[in-house]
Length: 252
Picture 1 (cartoon, rainbow, N blue to C red):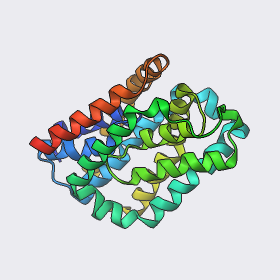
Picture 2: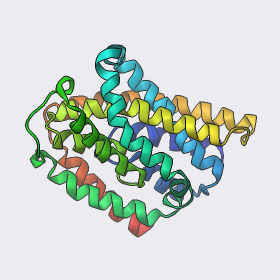
Picture 3: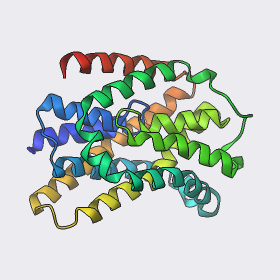
């Protein structure tokens, strides 16, 4: 993979990782539009650059993440369903899900319609992050685990899980940011361990550069997204997903 498409993919990752639009879906579809063939390196590159994006959250939410006894036990519980699902389906995820753009398009479309009605999704009584019970945390994690399907959106699934669990919209969004830390870190480390020694120094350098681009763009996206959702619904992202699915279906 050349430098230019690598930087484009990294920017796409940073801008979309924490928005409910599916960063993985956008990476797959952007790769198709750029003519980047899905190879083991490209698939690993798309996973590793998530480290740059997650570092942006770690910097912006350092105070919350530093409250080890308060937030980390909750993140550990919420992460469990995704850990089990990702470990069990790792082979299928890399060999099947990432190589079928139609799956991504369908997931984008369905998720878009769900987001149009996200503000009406309240199945459980109102709650705050610090008061989330184990069943509610597992519910959020179960929603997030659906994101092993490209196009579903890890952020979108986690946000919907938070809304269903009774969190206010902004808290649902911010908990999805925090939950991304163990989720993405585990996925990246696991992929690197499985692929250890498979990449050249040049490819490792490309991963580092891509992670840096993802860090910068993710920091901008996170700050803008929090400001936006503080006073507006998520419906605009639903319409975006529907439009993106249609465009990718027609032209990708």
